[in-house]
Length: 325
Image (spheres, rainbow, N blue to C red):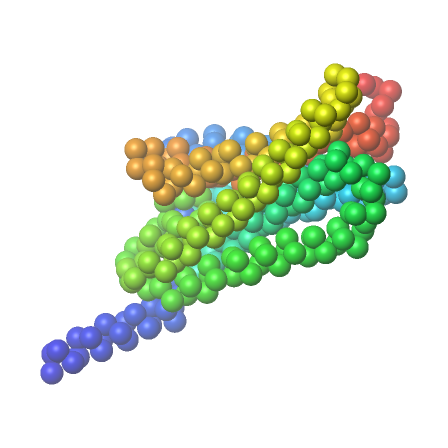
């Protein structure tokens, strides 16, 4: 009788736990609880920069017909994604660090996780599209506008959107299979996929394997595509006679290369430390993971605003501050 009742009670307990959909407790920055309000200040500045910069970029491109070109349309996509990415992370993270609003509902946690990972994938896809744009602009300049006309750009944007949605939709679906029968304390400032998976007391091999596969697939293929694009660009530029012409060709890629480095380098480092960096202090990993989601959205508008003359001039004209510079 005991052999029958015990498994049955365990099953009912697990089922009721699923139905209860427990809340999670976000610690914030583990080990730095006493100084979290100071850490929140630069994060708040980054978030405000991201909001102001990306809204400015979107407004500038939207209101200036001369900027309705492939490069700027892709930049508008990047700014829109950055707004969602930063807004999916910063408000709750700042609430945890500043006002100790540590609790987050089960569904809210899954939604936040989906938006963070899905839009990170979309940003990577847009960076690939921007590399393609630079390749066409430099290697096939006479056919740039005919190859990348608005309809093609719209289709590329739709592919990036659908890819991000389809690849990351299984994350919350697979997590709903898991049983959380122990403490639901997340040692993080937001709902990160692996941090939640590690809390499960049921089998989570599928979740871990799928998360790793998606990360390797998205980053691996996208970095490969960007690398191939720039290898072809480099080959074409080296054939151009004259140092000044080469420098001008390279300068058109400068902004994009800076954005690529800002996005991929901390992202890859954060991923590797989370998976394999047992020697890295946990608070360092959490800080890096949080900065990874806020630094690119804050810096991307600054990079393009400084390095792209058309956007810089248009912004100065919109705000009527050209005479002050």
